[in-house]
Length: 203
Image (cartoon, rainbow, N blue to C red; front, side, top):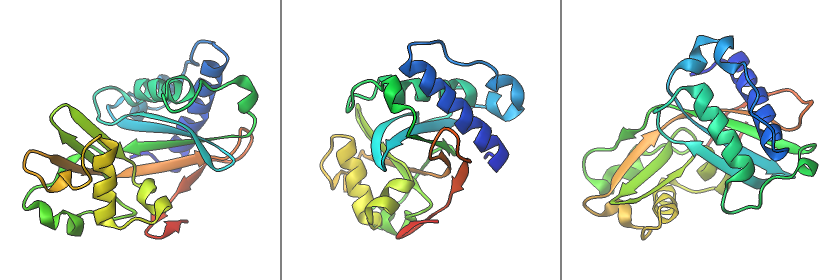
């Protein structure tokens, strides 16, 4: 996982990538050469917010490419390719919050599904649900922001996958947990901070 300095560098680079995508320019260069950690495979999400409201969120859930490349794809996707929102415009960049979540590899839950709520820790875990061709992921900060308990978190992740809310109990559904380090920059000239999660809120 990244240190605060490495996370700050990742967020600042992601902001540059978001700004380039919004302006139709090429992605910035240089992240690969600043620290060896950016060349290691890692999952990552880039989340954009304006006035506290979601404006885009795209990610690479699993460590199948180098962090630098995954971060670039996620930043460009959050700016231009999130189907819930129109492409980001240059006029929205000034008050844009950029958040980067670097993920640990997902670990599948084993045992009886009815015991899954006891093994999912709100404020620590994110969830990945897969069943057949369908899959859905929610980051660790989502249940904290929404005030969900572990069972509701499981249900909501199933619905994110386009499945019934109780699909996590069904045979053939694969539920995995992961952890994330969250770094956020509220505006282009503000400091990057690490976001620490806890049940009931952030700190």
